[in-house]
Image 1 (cartoon, helix red, strand yellow):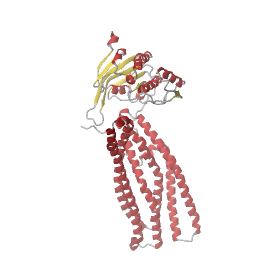
Image 2 (cartoon, one colour):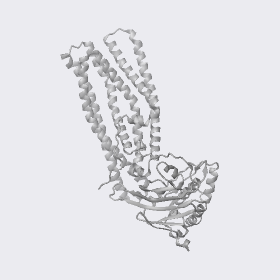
Image 3 (cartoon, one colour):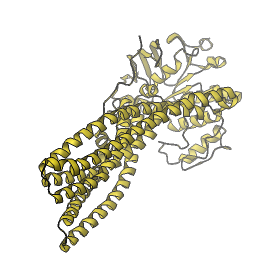
Image 4 (cartoon, helix red, strand yellow):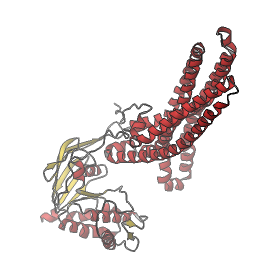
Length: 555
């Protein structure tokens, strides 16, 4: 049985992202929309004034209203451009901050299912598309107000001619809408292809060494994998834009058809004075520009809708799975960690059978060193993520000093733990550390970890992180020292260290943490140091098959 798709579809309407992503900029949006409406009405009034001057010449007193309308239209146009620039930059800022915040607040399993390539595509391409779409709305208001004002003016001039104009417009709108639906479907397919393209870009940056070492692999990746993805994206976008070009042509055709009907056919059936025909012809011609602008902005609107649906599809925009912390408290100085009947089932996407860890029953005491051992795939990393609160047990419970860990206090629980995972990330700045003598403390640990000749610090900023993997892990250990938390977890930390420093880690660093009353948990394969552990926990196929004190200590 195929597992359900991890991202259930979520519908998003066309205007939702304005309320969602720019709720703090609503005054700017209101001003921009009002300016757009005023500009559109000025345009409509201007064409009415021009028609009046054409049909009733020799009226010099109309020059002043004409000049006022021209100045108002131009002034509002410049002002609206300034507002649009501010609006677009605010949109990019708020979109990126909102998405980044929601990504950090989403559970780790949800982010792992999404994958880095989808998250990067959302933070870059979707943000760019949505911010561009936001700036369309004020201009859209100008066009709609102009069209609405002109239509109202035409309806006031002649009811029968206006009814005929509406009938022709409805046919044109129906034909244009039919073509736009096809373009929107193509945009959605193209957006999915962009996720794959970002994945291939990641392969270029992360797999450069492997691609350089094998020319056939590199050529196949470039000429088949990457070219297929880029070519497919080009084809879908080109097809969609050609459909919009066709709809643009249909829109212009509808205006010319309307003009032809008004000038040559309608007068045969409807009694129409010549000045009225001239006014209708001039107004319809004037409507060409706002109508074309409207059609030209439709691709941005549809792309914005597709991007919003993509973000909603990933459950990021509204942060449906956000983690909350309702009990902010200070960390416990000494922390006893206990797992009771903890079970977690991991089901990778695309695999029929998953992996089950547990049930696990373990206890970790302050001032105790525990080694987690076992073969690859035994469940050590999954257990580490459960113990650090990054994964939530599906059954059983985790408690700290007798306090059960729930959704309400999981964030508080995590503040007790410093962890260095095998796939750790190293920041080039000492973030989140409020210390008076931070630089002095960092220099002390740099010297202790034998990194002072390679790395300097100033105002919490490290001079470099471009070091060997073993040295980078020492910098990560420096950060863990500075955090000074009651529980420490190391995931294969010594694997990349030179023999002398590996020995120092097991025989000096870990015992010093133990002497400080820390709860120390170490995932390791270094069996020559097993005798130094206070507790030895062995995992096999997701279950604890051995949890005991090493024999060397018993003797």
